Length: 499
Picture 1: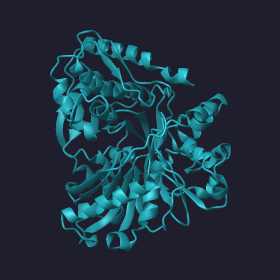
Picture 2: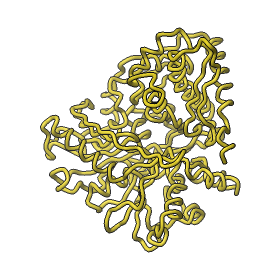
Picture 3: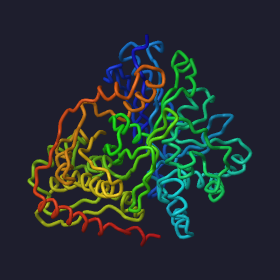
Picture 4: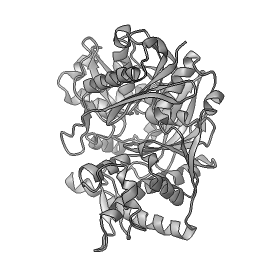
């Protein structure tokens, strides 16, 4: 009998592999960072080959950690950084250029052009998304336009497109699987979330050949098997979902109105809206949460570009902390931010602002501000950004929010979660296992092969580590939020002078 489900967690700055047992507990974990490339201001790239090799390294290491063989693995689930775009040669498996990362802003001008030409409503009604350089569509078009020979080769069927999940499945299966799931497809700005098909009108508009697109499959179901030469046996590849949808599933948000926020490199708030899409008029995106049992579940999402990356900035560029974990201690050395606000709009602002020309700013500085105030204000900025999204989400969904479930690296920060509860005026629940992204991928795969029998069984595995409850007055909350709103306005449109 197999003992574990293996989850590939292909993140933005590192790859991990986690083995989960039947109780949903972590049996083994391995992680390795990979290089980030910044060839021009606003450009972000990854080496797709390095994404693959590091993922395999951690997969083998996770097995070695507990002495597991391929026979001990019931299935593989994959979760991934979304929107990141890879194009490779169908015959050789070689990428035609580096992966263009979801954070990359190189296609902002083209996104502006699409909006100016009046395609906003059409794109939103078909895909649930706003037109933005964030999504895969404009990145794929850029590769076809800018890489010599790419368009001709794509049109002749020589090139394949995929997000990171597709790339990993293709490599893992020895080139036999070229597929993605509904959740990842819904993040490309090419997929019609109503018809559940690649949209021909959008493909024609962006001049993208349909032959290079992957097959779209349910998030839970056997897609194929791993090449036995890679992990030692033909292990079923049985689940895949974009990282934020996987976290929603891992947090067992199976009912309408249940919501989670992940504090990763970016910050992502998702609410389950059930079997029908809710289309936002105020900057949220409508996405497919997952597809299983011959149906799809939809979600409202607010995407915040910079969250944990702001703590990395404090550590690596500003040298104000030695590690991200230090931020909690530093923030509690002062009673407040001394009127200081940090807006970490390093790559523009996401939902609900959607200003791709916003840039980071620090406002309210006085002679009395020190590094502790700036560190505290940076942590607070995460809570304010989540609250901006949560306010819109509550209004547009019409669904009550009893509590906010949280996960991701920064959810270990008690100061941050208390600030979140205070600013959002809602209890914040941190589970015992905060690796809910990988857990969601494991659950989706395990359900497909009978490792777990039902969502009810999975829900029984979910345990609360700590609940953070609001502890400030409404007047204090309103004053803090007013200051944040004023600070955000200072960041709007900053980069337009450079265009």
